[in-house]
Amino acid sequence: MKHNRRYSRQGITLIEMLVVVTIIAVFAALVAPRLLRKSDTARITVARAQINSFMTALGAYKLDTGLFPTTEQGLNALRVQPQGVHQWQGPYLPQEIPTDPWQRPYLYKYPGEHGDEPDIICHGADGQPGGDGINADIVSWKSQ
Image 1 (cartoon, helix red, strand yellow):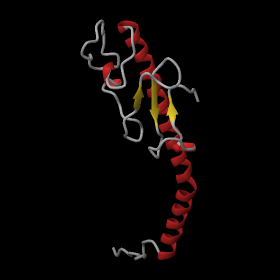
Image 2 (cartoon, helix red, strand yellow):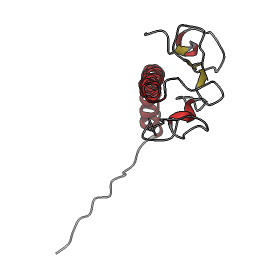
Image 3 (cartoon, one colour):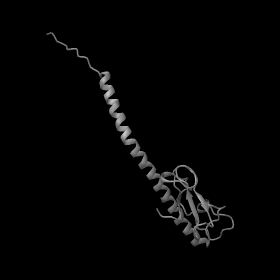
Image 4 (cartoon, one colour):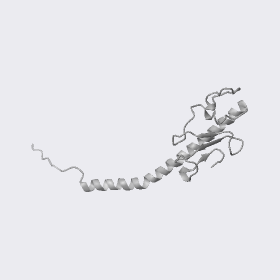
């Protein structure tokens, strides 16, 4: 018995490959900016949540010790008992003090300039004071 084999040319033509690459490029151009905006929004949300967590822990610190940590003691006083501070019942945070979502330390100041509580500041994506949008400061004294 003779088997007839058909030989067919299989593969992808250059035109087909260019069409697929073009579709992928158009999709990426439309979707990537939206995903990046969501990423920026998520970072801002994380910074606000971390600042709120710090403020809660600072409230517990003050209840135990009678004062907020000084600027020099900083947020690290929530994890490690500062010298000369009595009735410290910490650590007040379950993990090390995180950096902001852009990998910079939060700024802590007490006494603060915006009321009786400490000021905690994240300078946003650009790391500079002020700014708009993703570069805007995220601060403890404003709920946004």
